[in-house]
Image (tube, rainbow, N blue to C red):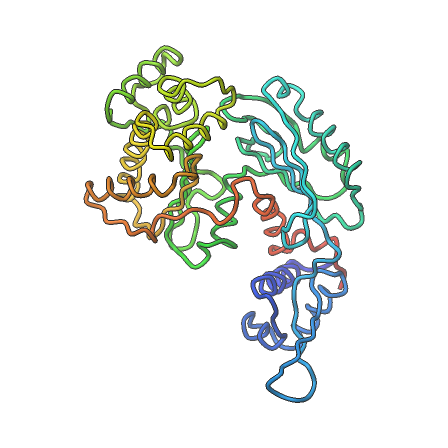
Length: 399
């Protein structure tokens, strides 16, 4: 039986190798603090089980024997990513580093939610017909939900604004012997950006997701507050910033009589945007994502009504950020929004409105992710974290 310390050491060495394109055993010993003999033993185990590999590097500045470095092996282990969103399911077979080998998208609707687990199993069957999975090479399955899951991490309980009960982990256990990891996509986004993304060297960051709901993550001194639980800001009250705010408030009072007027989520999320787009930019589109893409096109074409909607969004976002920045001394704000196709205008307005509140924000402080929101790399970060901690190594390596 392998000790917990041994597993953690293996995970630490794997993580260090992953952080560098190529690293020597000598540098690994320095960075990890482990003795050279331990490094030799640990790296041999990882090499034998094909988690890492040796690469020969010829140093052209000196003669003699080529140097040998260590790198992540892309040749054996594979990861399966399943991203479940309100309108689609994306299944991807990925390399150990999270790079997608093969991906397939499948459409879903609210009508599929009562039997969503069966629907996903049928998608997997179709996926395997097109790209067979090799069971011995599959390390784990990561299910990432753009919505909500239960506290036990076994069921999907919300997609978009629809509540549901989908026992996805139990359904997948009938198909796979590998570990099945169920997480909320927002939490994996935080993990990926803070541990592997462009914010890896920053200690104090606000993460704001603007979509079906508003979701906030806060990193203070390098640690995420309320780990695995984002901070609920949807019911915060916001001032009226004009006629559009008043129209949305009146509309929400009709559709949700118990809701308080001018809640921030009611002014900014998909239902509000869809209402404004249909009200001021007549269209025949049925999907909210299509409506928002249409809005962005109209903004780029300087349609006055579209620019007014952008002004409405930036006013409410700036007020929200002003309040958050007065609480948290954040050096960076990472924003994910469906309006990022027009982020130049959006960020310019946010910067100016925050300046009006007395908050100076340089362009470098307001950033977006380098990854696509539904990237399988984000879903695979759950498996990577399991490797770093040693949990997904213990059944694959014997010492």
